[in-house]
Image 1 (tube, rainbow, N blue to C red):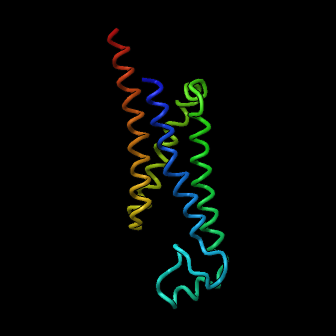
Image 2: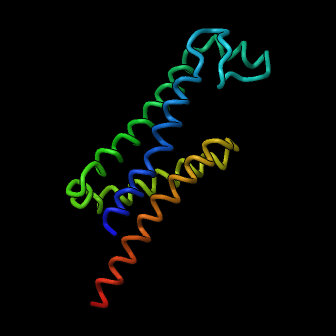
Image 3: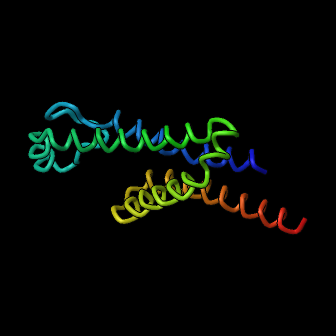
Length: 140
């Protein structure tokens, strides 16, 4: 059961790693470059293209998401590491996942809602797996 919990925890990192990397790839780097995260309104696109702040924000946001995914992978990389660090990083993973899910819902981004929703599900499944294990152990 402990290995299942660890695998669910690691699976929760995948949406963060994949969506963070996709976010970085689809961020326009040059003015007037049209990419996946470019606004569709031409007047808005023109005004935003003049601002390098938007590029900085998008890339730093991507980096933060990917680093969170890497942190989860490092915590869950071995059974020993996972057992030692789970008490601290499980609540952190739940809070961060729910925060990103809330942002996605608030701003209606479909793909992140699906990806982060899967992450929240796997992290909370891990909590459930640990709870079941504790309940079974308590009966013995």
